[in-house]
Length: 317
Image 1 (tube, rainbow, N blue to C red):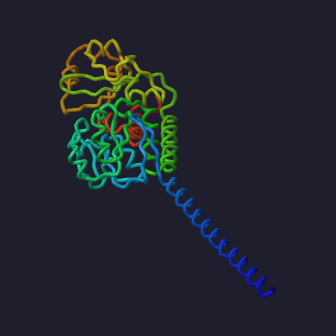
Image 2 (cartoon, rainbow, N blue to C red; image 1 turned 135 degrees about the vertical axis):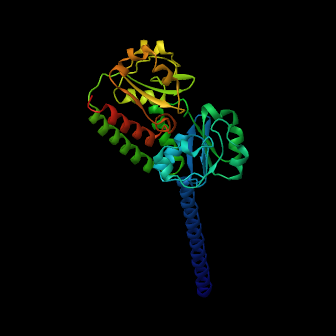
């Protein structure tokens, strides 16, 4: 009887021991699964954008960008794109971007990017513009996860918001926040050099056929407003075309010309007596700057170059 009891106790003890091992094993397995799930969630990036939500399983490595401002953003985050819509002209990049930009594949025009070329690059992220690319969003999204930002019509503050979205999509959210702080500091330091001002300042793209003012609804105009200058155009249109008589009525106190071609309509206007009636002309405050810096880059680097030019020409006014 005693022998049978010992055997029974031994059997119970062994059963409990085995069950304990199984329970520990299951616990370890569950813990491992939970840790793996946490890591997956940690690596997964969710981006809300203009046309929905895009989930990236990990930080992308092969990125295609369809606007100059996106290339500007990538350079500040030390990320090289594999494909860029550069309008088939790398000279359109501002110098600071071009100096950092390594070898990439041109995918043609921002307005009609080459879909087959994009597909051949096998990207794992495409960054597109709402105004230019909403009609081809489904095509792009079949190639790779695509986020769509309101860039072409964006003002300066919208650009800053877009920048943080891009940084997050690249898995560099903290780096993006830090670089944005540096940007704000640079702008504030430059504003101190400009000082208090009541000048009305008008940026305008010029070509042989027209003078296209950039109101405070445009990116460039909104940046000038942000740093303390007044917009003389007061137009709801971002890029109103002005005739010479309209420009005289607007009467800006400083003009920044952004020529798109070597010869522009201003060459003709300069021979007209009306041109001399403009305050900016009378006070020698008509300046020519690079369109690629002021109107195309539309990012942190572009904005920092703009305020550098402004300090150079209008500092301590």
